[in-house]
Image (cartoon, rainbow, N blue to C red):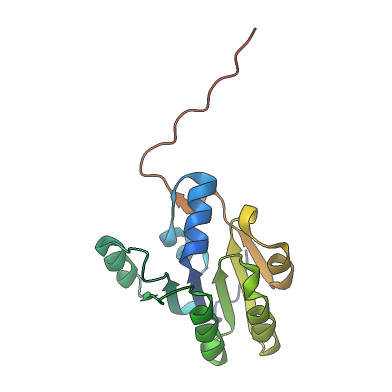
Length: 163
């Protein structure tokens, strides 16, 4: 993927969407280090991770996230509204908004950001991303097994029985 190095990028992560998708599809945790690395050599000005307060976040993850320069926001309920407000507020200072998550509730946000002149990239597991979101984005980046961390190797697949 080629991108302009002078672009100012904001990365907004719907943690519930990304993490549940990665876990349900590939049985692993989302590899945020790789995700941020793959965003490219552009100037990332903000990295914000949204996860409801009733979902635990380990101290190890908090240390890791802050070491990358990221912020964690924990709303009482659904994070979609918080993410949307931050993306709208910061859009004046960004060239590109990277939205990690494929929830179709983000359609009005994508339209708004594009009308304000921001490019919108959607990074999501294709199996759980809305087709509407894919089509509305300036760029859709399909996440796959490379974006998951497996604490232990997955069990071997059973061999077909020959009769």
